[in-house]
Length: 204
Image 1 (cartoon, rainbow, N blue to C red):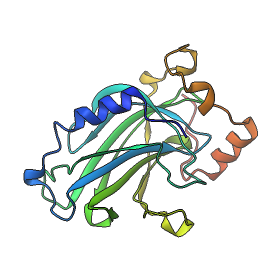
Image 2 (image 1 turned 180 degrees about the vertical axis):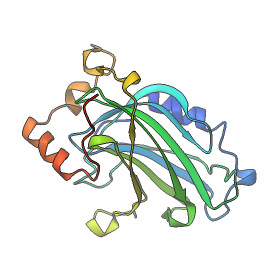
Image 3 (image 1 turned 60 degrees about the vertical axis):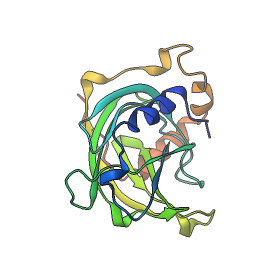
């Protein structure tokens, strides 16, 4: 797994502006937020928000081995609890990202029932996990290493954003960790596509 990039740290610092405990859900005092991916579908996250309009962030790589290892997040940050702005018991999370293997951009929004989140050490556990073909899973794992500690709250299939496609692999030196996260075989990549809950997109 890779350490959180500088872009990810800047994202978490920026989110603190929008996360205010004064109007937050009371069951936990903080939020543990992390990002990850299946081993053959690392991504570059370019936009992200919780309970806010989707906004650009400093690009960062989300990469782990979420389909086979715990923890599924590649690092995490502890933040204040987001406001439930609509007081509906759910957080609206939006993200836009680019698949590193294909250069294809995707965008998705999802409603996260707050009561479905695991609480550990007085913090909500929230993992934003990316899979092939625009698959986005919100995980909330229990603390532990057993397969039974995995908890998926919701999975959605994102929509394509062809105008934002980008070959980040060609950006030499932008992400020092890039050679490491791309160390998988073409056969493993095809197997990941077969296992995806989301269909392959039609060719544009």
